[in-house]
Image 1 (cartoon, one colour):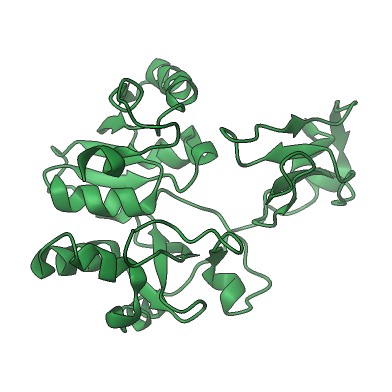
Image 2 (image 1 turned 180 degrees about the horizontal axis):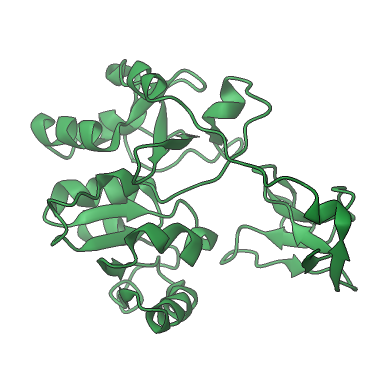
Length: 286
């Protein structure tokens, strides 16, 4: 028999309209046995700093269920490396790369493209693919985002331009299990390099150009800074740079990880800067 809570947050990538901020950033609770959603208002908004809505079901006791114990563990689905290579083209139609070329010399941009396997897709005109490749060189996911080629800012109107490759190619049975963006960059030969973690994939890539002596990774979201994603780099020196206003949350996680043997430091650099809330490392150095 396996014990777990009766209600858990949906682990799929599906998002719903938040009852508080009305953005499509709401993760709903599901019944662990029936796999059905509870209702439209129990759940958590991913816009933690701007909304923060989080409502748990009124009764959420631990359950013992033969249904759960007899269910095989769901294994994640992967993309092929050949797909990654296939989309490493048409860079002239990539808004994010166009932005990089206005700030950095081509040789450095090309090196960043190769290092992070940056892809281009016509899912939206000018969209970028940020591949999540783990330390075993397994392709966990492809995150699609659209940027403004002039400002480098993510396009958020008329809607939030974020999607996933498995949805774009209509692979409906895909089981998403994320890893740190840039995790594949670690090597035994460069185990002396400090690993720096930020939230945004864009920031990790730009910082890798400016400070190539470190290895730059990204969580992809505020809530993705958690031990589950950091386990492969537990024995490396880690410095994390939370966005402005997120220090307390990331520092709390860092302190817990430190107790578990992680060599990790949470930087106050952005928190003590004059940046507006939500500002990141690129806003400070570029």
